Amino acid sequence: MSIVNTFSLQSNRQIKINFDGGDLSFDAGLLLIKEFISKLGIERLLNRSFKTNDSAVFRYHTDRDNLLQMIYMIMASYFEDDASDELTKDPIFKAVLEKSALASQPTVSRFFNRMDEDTLKQFQEISQILRKRIYSIQMPQAVILDLASTLLAAYGKQEGRAFNFHYRSNGYHPLVCYDGITGDLIKIQLRDGAAYSCTGVTDFLQPILDEYLNDYPTIHLLLRGDSGFATPDLYKQCEENGTSYVIRLMENFIKESKSGFDFSAVSSHNRIVNANRVQVHALAYNIFNWFRRLVLSAKMRKQRIDTVRLKLLKIATKVVHSARYITFKLCSSCPYKEEFYDTLSAIGKLNVQLE
Image (cartoon, rainbow, N blue to C red):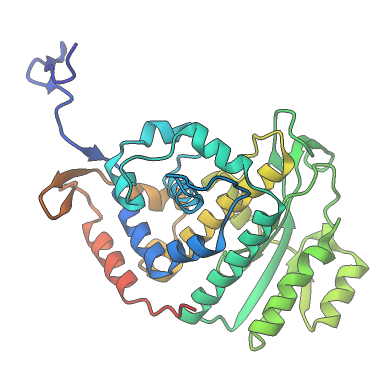
């Protein structure tokens, strides 16, 4: 049966249906994300600073391309590797990645399986470089280091998966640190599910304190954690590094990370692969959070990821090709046209200091 055959609804013969609408997508808002990513120099940064353990001399789908593909997919709420096959010819994804087709699900899975301890270090270095670029736009006067642990549920035979008595469930029990003012995810580290809240917390925290004390000495630091971190070693560490602290924590940022960016996508049997997957989702979360607070309107930046996706990212578009240009004709009835154009204008006005 031809896909261009036209059918009528039995309930209303005046309504006709066919699949002859042309090259369409409903993720046109990713064009805004591409412009933002380009403004921050993220594509060039990943090209020089991210490399998996790969012995191949040439790959059509490079490490940088695969990582960017996953970031865009997570932004648009396509969390599973399988979605790569469904999106392979999507015109928006091809445009933001500047490729004729996306990497397939097997290619993406092999990409994750090539990650190791070294790529974990690379993610931390990339995070620090991007934080410096964000602070070059808007330097905070103070940072609240929101220290927490949370459960990432796991249902298979993943290495390190264990029962956590506090959450009464199986999974991983990572440490996380957010900026309690901006929502930026400063660091996340996967741990075995049975780990106690404060296990390894001083080793986790010290690189953060070193970064801020050395690179941003004018920023006032306040550590905030829940009762699970009420340990003398942590108090001593804060006092030795001139950091104020209070034992209490807000859960909002953790909930948005887990629900809006699927931090629980830890399906590999290999613990290191899962740790790297979490870092990819964390990077996507941060890029979105910077996008939200730096270029969206005052009203829009208060809204959660699901709302922003619905209003700005999930916009229908038709692609028109000419000899020189690709034109994306966005939905005429979109109620957020002004917000879209204002956001694009705000991205253009960003003054980012690149290395």
